[in-house]
Length: 236
Image 1 (spheres, rainbow, N blue to C red):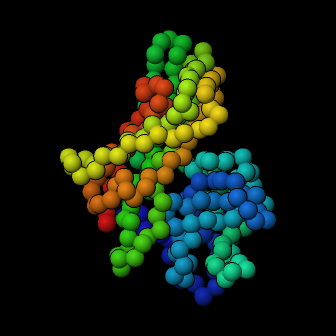
Image 2 (image 1 turned 60 degrees about the vertical axis):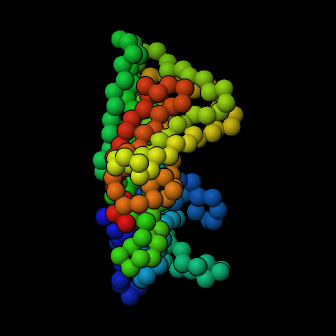
């Protein structure tokens, strides 16, 4: 099971940590960037799924929506409501592949080539911890499509249904859930050589409610050839 990082130091200030997460723009607050943690930190009994970036970001802002491993100084405090907040100060980050990432090469012709990648982070998790309390985990599917061909990849989405997702249990009959990701305003996609299209999709508990192995597929709704499958495990 992918367990949350636990920090039991008397003071979290000036504690250097290394964490893995997804770089995202901050919705509010003085920091413009943060690190979203699909598997949360546990700091003195408090689960933290978001680390704001403070100090020198060392270029982490150039990695929006990318999965990274970041090392920095952990700073923990409280906001005006008394809720725990945490920041990663002066982080240094490097992109890395999530565990279990799948790469799918697509070649429709000599000039039409692309690579699809798909991963679920974390790939092994429990909705509850060993004590039976909610674990705070938020599993994320990370999908990307990169054009390696000489001609653009072009697709139309007349109903704005861009990403199609299906999660089903390996054990027949346990669970089978499908849904689409709507992107209002997105009717067309055109990717030139080396251009990337990516999307991050959260897997809700209802899609994988019980312990067992599951298979997730993510694809472009207008072109199922641009898709991939990945396996993951729910432990409890």
